[in-house]
Every structure is written in C-alpha cells, then in structure tokens.
Length: 127
Image (cartoon, rainbow, N blue to C red; front, top):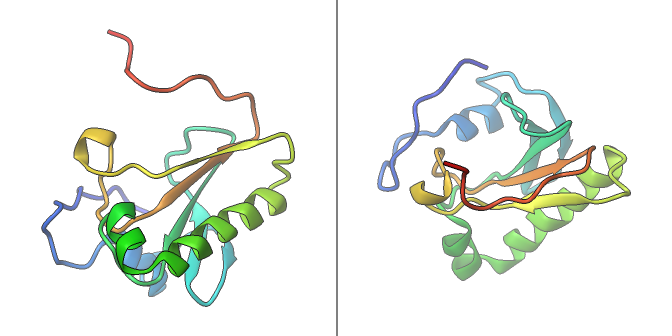
C-alpha cells in the first residue's frame, strides 16, 4: 500500500480502509468475517500489528458504540480471533485511537491488535 493522507474528522470522502475493504488496494488480510476485515498494518509498531476494521464506516469507536454496539462486539471478537491465529497467547494490546489528539489519522474506526513481544508502557511521549 502506498502512503496515505490523513482523513479529517468531517471528511465524507472514501477512506483508505474502504478501498482495502473493496479490494481496490492490496492488503495482507489475516481474517475476515461478514462484518469485519483484519489486515496487517503497513507501518507496524510491534512484531504483530493487525488492524481490525468494520466493513461499515463509523468515524470513531464512540460513534460506533452509540450506533451499533453489536458491530463493536464483532470487532472485539475478530481481534480475539486474530490474537489466536497469530499465536498471541501471552497477551496482546487492543487499541482504539479516537480523534486527532490520540493519533487517529484515518477516520474510519479501527482497532490495533499489537503483540508478539513484551510491550512497553504507553501514554505521553518523552520530550
């Protein structure tokens, strides 16, 4: 996949993830269900770094939780399946970045499944 420009919170244009879901952009798909798609991140932040994306677009996890809690549950179930498939029995991190200040650059809700190594603490970046 090529580098992408961040989508803005109010941007209604097609996102990178919608193009991956439509198979317009290649991705290393790890798992797929009727409602979700899981594929490897192009800039991994851990040994295992997989994105779990709902096939229906919601901008943030808060928006998704309010509108379709069952789909949010499907995303978490998919993340657990990815962890199983990737051999992350010792643990994994499931992260939703919500908003630009949290680092969300694609405004199509997605979960990061990170693992395969001992993960450090997270929070404020060191100055």
